Structures are given as structure tokens and as C-alpha cells.
Image: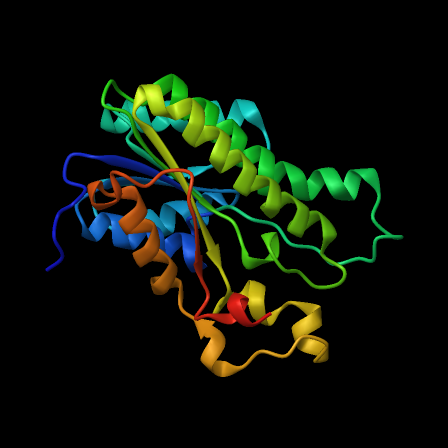
Length: 245
């Protein structure tokens, strides 16, 4: 049985219905947290929450819509009475050349991959309690080293690291910590449906493929009091792949 590092704490995990998000939610629940699982697919969010017991709530939320983000946070407060942790995991990755991306294409990705985290960060400052809390942003190694045809995703993830630093600076006086995790190649549909991977343009060594549980473990550390003196940091969880790129 895992240590209850998050007893009496409440977490929101975006993009929490499957993959990395569901693994994060399961890890935080296993360590005692109540969890609101936010996902664009409301039914999937509720189904995932249903597998985790009574202290879990599924909620349909488009993270790129600020009013829906506010409603999501209010749902957590109404159900659990407080909010201590936000994990900004929801992500969208599309593939076109720079010559093909339209303004609408860019905004579709940026709204999910960057503005969603910004909207939830605002809510953290408004609704975390007097003891503060922790924000963990799920960025990507694409924030540091990227590949062709994914410019908006890479740009959004790079900007998320800057948002993390800004949050750490502004959060210091109100006990809000913010850190980022940079997953590498993780065994999820997003990896295997990547057209660069499918075509062989980007080769993946099996030793470089991690699991959603690997990311969840890093998130749980950064969200916990074990990381009380860590804020504004970016942690690559990639099996060392980034170090070799």
C-alpha cells in the first residue's frame, strides 16, 4: 500500500480520462488524494472516475474555454470543499508543414496546449487555500528539441515552460509551487499515431519508450511535500533520450 502523501488533498487532472492523465489520477488517488478527472470526453471522464472509488469525480471540460475551466474548478470545490493540486495534462498534437498551418489551426492547438494551463493556473491563484498548493504542467521534450510538422505543439510546450517559471515567481509569496514534467516517448496512442513515427521519419528505440506510470510517479513527487523546495523546475522524464538528441 502506498504512503498517503495526499491525504485530505484535492487534485484536478486535465486530460485525465486515459493515457498519461489517467495514470496520474490513479497514482494521486492511490496516495490519498480526492481527484476531479477533467476531460473533453465527459463520459470517458466519468467512467475513469468510476473505477477509482467515491473520492473521484469525472467532469467534461474543454480546457481551451475559460468559462468551462472555471466551472470545472467550481465543481471540485462543490464536491470536495477545497483545491490543492492542479495537473495540466490535456494536450493536442496535429501535423502539418509550416506553410500549411492556418491561424485557426494554430489557435486550436495553442488553446489546449498552452491557454488551458494558463486558465487553470489563474483558478489556482483564485482558489487554492491559505496554505497554497502545487501545479504540475505536463510539457514535452518537444519544448527543447522537436521534429518537423509539429510547430504549434512544440511552441506551446516551450511556452508552457515559461508559464511554469512565471507561476513559480508569482506564486512564491502565496505558497504556490509550479513545476513542469517533460515526457519523452511514452507508450500511448499519441506516440504510435504520430505520422512521423508511422512513416519511419522518426525512429524510436524501444529502450526509450516509457510508460504512463513513469510520468505519474514524477508528477506525484513534484506535487508532494517531498518537493517542497522545488519550484520553477523542468524535469525531463524520457529515459535519457533528450540528452542524446
